[in-house]
Length: 378
Image (cartoon, rainbow, N blue to C red; front, side, top):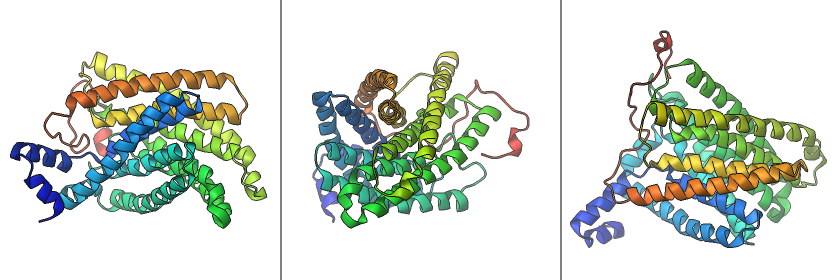
């Protein structure tokens, strides 16, 4: 008997069954909680709210290893459930939240002077990303069925968030990489370009899917906010490349291109915010779908915090102070959303194990119908 099995055997049967059920049904995208908490903490610290930032970082210092431990325990006790998620086209991209969470937490460490720990966090995230990026696209290519993957349900753009998060932390830790610093700078510039390329592909599919095919209330999930969050983190990453001196003329020659693309991507992400609010109004006001807690809500909180930080960094990179006021306002909005979501989590934590929010698709009324949509599968 393993140590985990022994510990559960000493737990009262009902409590043990409850804990085991929660572990088995753990949503792989729950690391978005760490992403959301960390990005708000980092933003508040850069804006000078040190006590509040440190309080959020302390909570993250507990939540991050806790989620890692639960994931490892799930792999040991319920390997079939974990494997079913990782080969599911609807869920495999949720695992990129592990990459982004590691990088966001690493940035928090770096802001507090733990540069060595931040470097190791970046290396761990890089290895995880390298495995996931090819495995996830392999799943999408070889295991997807006619109705298996949906660019709206699957949160594919989380892959871009994970990619661009490597750029942000990489720009911070590169100077401490010694002789490898030039290689790290080249790599993060490459990753920024990879992220933009993936975003161009995914957002095209996303817009085509949501504007030209049948959309129901179940299609409008918090994961839709990742389309804005991916643009915001790409802006943040581009601003970091602008603000960081690599000392390499080859990379310095890219500065005009990075300048222009960073502003364009920020504008694109800004354009999506009112549209996403309209989607939410349509679902919860017009279609009267109750607003209840789901772990996907953390994927809504994170883009709000990232947009605040991206606006702050862009204001520095572009020397445009008005964006700083926008960044401050968005930081408090993100904090309010974080508090509301945390309250929802606290209210739901004692409920029975829930199914993965993306495992099954449910068709509800209130959607529109396109007569030709059955001819193309998503």
